[in-house]
Length: 96
Image 1 (cartoon, helix red, strand yellow):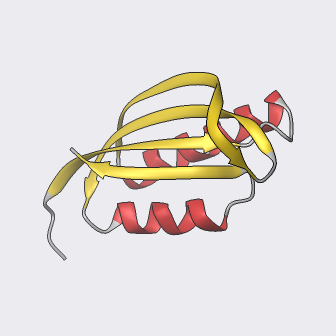
Image 2: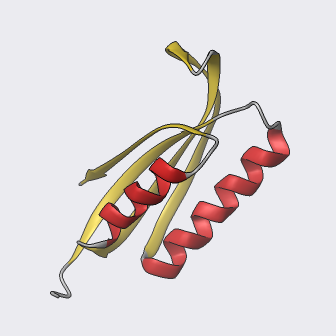
């Protein structure tokens, strides 16, 4: 396992079905998860936005951008967690 660290950004679209408190809790959960496994360089909450198309019968989502620096293995694990987490409509992780 190499110790090479890369910069990444990830955009997550959270479902608003559970209300704003649920969204805040999820944002906090992922902030902590990233801090535990990487260096969190910044969090930019874009807030409520209309989706380009309906996802799970929802027309709006709550967008959050996380910037982080980590070893190469973490983004794959983060993506896996996104996929199994209820309340995430879409996610994308990009290596900068």
